[in-house]
Amino acid sequence: MTDAKAGPEVGTDQPGFDRRLLPPMLLGSVLNPINSTIIAVALVPIGRALGAPASQTAWLVSALYLATSLGQPVVGRLIDVFGPRRLFLLSTGLVGVAGVVGALAPDLGVLIGARVLLGFGTCAGYPAAMALVRSEAERTGRDGPGGVLTALAVANQTIAVVGPLLGGLLIAVGGWRTTFALNVPLAVAAVLLGLLRLPKADPMADPETEPTARTTGGTTRRESLAARLDLPGMGLFAAMLVSLLLFLMNLHLRDWYLLALAAAAGAAFAVRELRAATPFIDLRVLGGNTPLLATYGRALVAYVVAYSFLYGFTQWTEEGFGLTPFHAGLAQIPMFLLAIGVSIVSGRSTSVRGKLLLGAAGQIVACLVILKLGGDSPLWMLLLVALIFGVPQGLNNLALQNSVYFQADPERTASSAGLLRTFAYIGSMVASSATAASFGQHADTGGLHRLAWVMLGAGVLYLLLTLFDRTLGRAAGHGTRASA
Image (cartoon, rainbow, N blue to C red; front, side, top):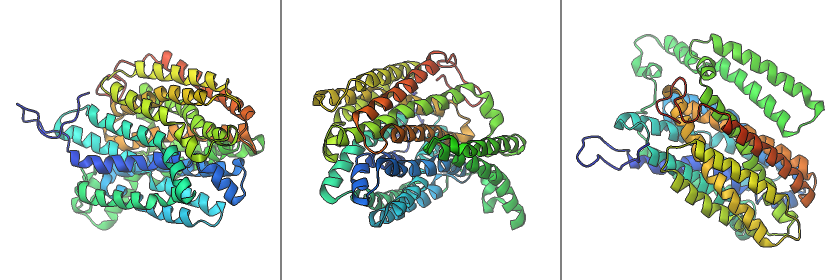
């Protein structure tokens, strides 16, 4: 991959990446991670203010990921068809609405509703950014704009890790409601940047879906558009995913019917997609793209570890160790600093296997250290755990993002990127469920150790999925243009 340039290279007529697109791309892509992470230090204050135990406030985490897991690939597909601009503006506007609802919420139910709105509102940012990267790569003739991909990864890493610190600061200044109100100015800024910077003629839009491209009546165009979007496929996908995630939110045998419903919807979805002329998710292509499937599997287990640490460890530092929300966020500064440094340095290399293996090792070591923590542990041990987690935090996301960019069908870049986030959010749902089950009513040290064993198992699985993946380092199947 080559670094993006602001203009033509010296001595060549080749254009460079349009850097005017970077501000809306970066801001849009971080709206989801900032809302994913800032809530970590707000769960305990919200629970105290609304009289809700940890097992109930966990729904604030699950609600956002339920909405985003469903919305990312759907919005990604819409971006593939219509282009980034319209979906970006609509979604980021919804983020501002959700911020107002959350800031004024009278009870936990309304607050959960605000998180659902945030989940749908933050769906467009990342797929739109990846679609713009793809369109700029095609315009400039540079198939691997590594500098831009690294910038996206670093921005997400920065927000993901600084989120708890920012949340703690906001709570200290204005209470937990400020963590929701923050979305209002962010949404306003994103909409303005989108209006000013994103191309009005969406480069990724399919001209066959545009009204001006049709010479026949309106009915013909609507039928073509409906077929292009595959609305039945989207509906079956939604039924499958919602049933699965509801089951994962509260694992119990009494909810077996949810798992059965997910399996039935999944079977119907597979039949539909294999028969559709223009499927929502092309299972024929996806099934033949082993490297991309392996990347999705690694994303799932990687995020089980990452989000178990983010939510579980942070809650324990407040309730089990006695830190304030602000200091709980402050304790993660070592991870913030190291993750950013690791992302910047490793972003210069196209190697994926090395990043994945080192990231897996970092997860495993950090989990082993967590098993040694207790309420009377010295503060430096907490900082050590955060520091160790900075390594996988800086490596895994970048490696997974770059893998999808090169492994996905170019015509489905946005939906493939959205599907990566879906698998990641399924992992986060497993993490949320594991955190709630491990802690119960109180985030004590025993619960932290139970959670650490779950994290360790996922970390080992992540390592095995990487060690035995023979597709790493060579060209993938359909749609791959460069080695992963």
